[in-house]
Image (cartoon, rainbow, N blue to C red; front, side):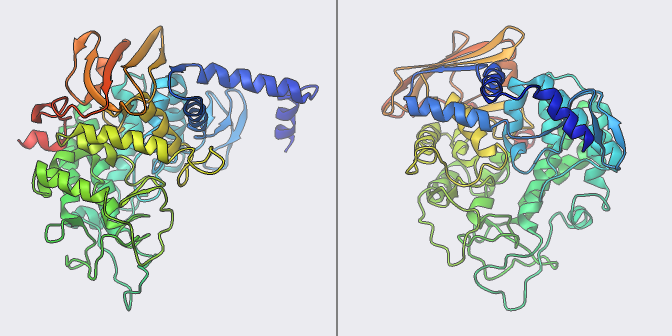
Length: 490
């Protein structure tokens, strides 16, 4: 208490509301001004900077360098760097951490060090819900050139993924069978059972984590580990039921759980806060592999089309399900990456139209003009808006790949530090002209609906020419698709 009171006195000597207000505005301006946008409407610019502000809701600063804090063991220590609290990996680990890496790499280093120290203090890396997504933060930062002791932290990332006594629930079962089963409750009640192990969704999450770990291990020269984790990264296919064309829960004997309705909003039974429709797409590391499971490009596109057009009419109550486009639920995180999947399947113009629709309909469309669908989950849904409005999105944050959508503004300039900037221009842009007709990157023609961090690392200019009708030739060729895990098997 004494330290908290002293901190208050140190931070606010001679209390004056107007002065504190002015200082707060100046402090936030130093960060928010790192991104300059022109064009769009006044409301769109308001929403952009509001969501950018909210994107930095987490993680929370526990103690500034030199201040005292209580560590995970209960010991009082003095911070040798800015000490942050745990990252909500199940939510912001899907997108917001990449925005942090782009805008505040020094802060990211402190966040990674904080997580590393918490792992040293308690023996395991922090997790969040049904995933083990800390590897996304570290591998993504590594690929974006942020210096860190990546070899040191690997010991804890590996321990999480291999120790059955660790925080990865049901790891022994996952390792043994290649999937996590669920227990069918007595009577199989309807609305769908809200308890359970979220076995199918957890299997999907762990497979995604394992792919990132395989990449991480290979970068360290840990070939045996890399092979082990890469094999497990294919486990998502073990919960794909070809007879229905959906991810589906299994019982311990391997049988598919019945009855099963992909529209039902299972909360922890088979799925996690999502339906079978939403969970189907939870393989960002291997979109091409999922495409193969669904029968190829045409079948994949047809399934996506049904996903975004099938009316949402479940019998059960959907908790945390708002912001609907067909079966798509923008108000929660499990399927927020799916609008960008058309970039892999040769129809990027559908991604472009969907992104603009979501930006318009799901944000600021309430009576007040400020709210948006669902929950922000500490900056995750806000970060979706920020990056999508700029024109790109990190479908897999452990990757160095950014998927292209449809830029909302005529001009975006993102200050990446060190005198480097990402300049994004959209010529002939308007509410009707949402489709990319052509693009250049650093003056050279660009015909892929994605780019790598290496393409912009030293600063870059990305220019789009927009139009009111789809250009079905731009970014649609099979060789234009972004990489996936399955590429190595082709």
